[in-house]
Length: 159
Image (cartoon, rainbow, N blue to C red; front, side, top):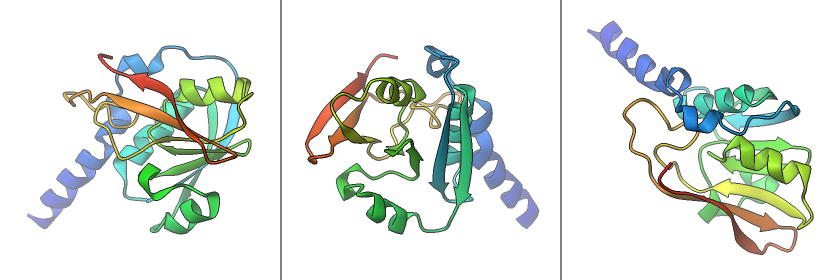
């Protein structure tokens, strides 16, 4: 029975990796970036987001740790903007389930001196949270500037 429960939990944690919504594959570009992603070794949605990044030609350095909080603090992620994983690409901090398209768009043209993109929490349906049958919550990607000004970078509804 114990093996059955462990097997079921493992399957559930890995589901997002294998069941991505094709919506998040739109807007791919050939541009490639290296990104460090700090996450828990047991988090399935973190692994799903990593897969999403890889599908968009990011070269991911997956850094597993049981407590990502010190990284978030060091990088200046505000508590109200926190999620389950944190990425760093070309000096830009990427917190949570930010679509790869938004990361690439900002990296290509960061005239507003944005230091952080974040999707607070874990909205169902977003990249890495898009397993088959998952509801699709509306969500916003927030930008935080070098001066710590917060703005909405993009919005997702009815996707």
